[in-house]
Image (cartoon, rainbow, N blue to C red):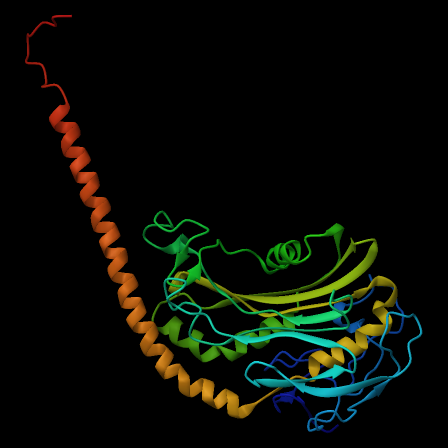
Length: 362
C-alpha cells in the first residue's frame, strides 16, 4: 500500500493514527465523523462532523471555496454554505475560510513587557481570533492565546515573594493545573451566564501529546544530558453541555499543557481551542466549524518578519529582565534589612537576663 503523508507538514503517517505524530493535525483529508451517533460513543473528535472535503489551499478572497450540505442558520436542515478566504485583520498573519454572512473578531496582539513587569509573555505574538455566525457567538470557534504562567513551586522562595495573582517576570503567577482543570476554569470564565454545565465526553488526545514530545525531542535529550528536568506535556479535549439564555449548547474545547516548572518556574497552555453550537444543530454544523478550523493558512512573509523581530524583542526582554532582577534584589535586600533592624530592636528592648541567685522583685 502506498505511503500516506500528512497534508499539513508533509511527514509520513505511520499506523492507524487519528492525528499526525509530528504536527498533531488530523491525518485524513476527509474529517470523518460518524453520522448522528450518540454523543457518548467513540473518541470525541471522530464524532464531530459528516465527511467534509478539505478546501483547496489557494482560493482567492471572495471566491466560493466550498459548497457543503450545511447552512447559514441553526436550522436542523440548512442549505448550502459559501466560504470566502478572509485575512486576519490586524497583521495579515494568516487567512481562514469564513462562511458568507459570518463575522470575525480579534486577531494577533502583542504584550508590552513594561506593562506586566517582564518579558515572559512578550517574546512572541499571541492570537485570540474567533469566527462566529452572530454577535453573540451562537455558533463559533475561537483560537485562544497561549500564555506563560509562573509557578514558583520549585524556586528557592517557593512563591513567598510572588504569591498567586501577581506577575513574575511578565508571567501571571498561577499554580499549574491539569489540562482538564485548565479547560474547566477557562469555560467558567468565558461562559459566566451558563448554567448546568457538565462534562459529557473526555479524550486525552494521546496522539497530540506524542506530537508535542516529538517536537522537543532534541531539547529533552540535551536537558537529560545536562541532568536537568525535561519538558512534560498533557493534552485534553472535552465536550461540555450547558444552558445559556434559555438555549442548550454543546461546546468542544482542547488544550495542551507544557510543564517547564523545574527548569524555568513556568508552564504554558498551547493548542487551545473552543468550538460551540446549539445542541440541536451541533451534529449538522460541526463539519462546517471543523472546515473553518482546518483551513487556517499562515502568511509566511509575516512569519519571517516575526522571526526577524525576535532578535530585537530579545534585546528589549534582556534589558527589561535586568531591571526586574535589580528590583527583585533590592526588594530582598530591603526585607532583610528591615528584618535585621526589627530583630536588633527586639534584642535591645528585651529585659537583661537574670543573674544566678538574683531574686525576683515581683
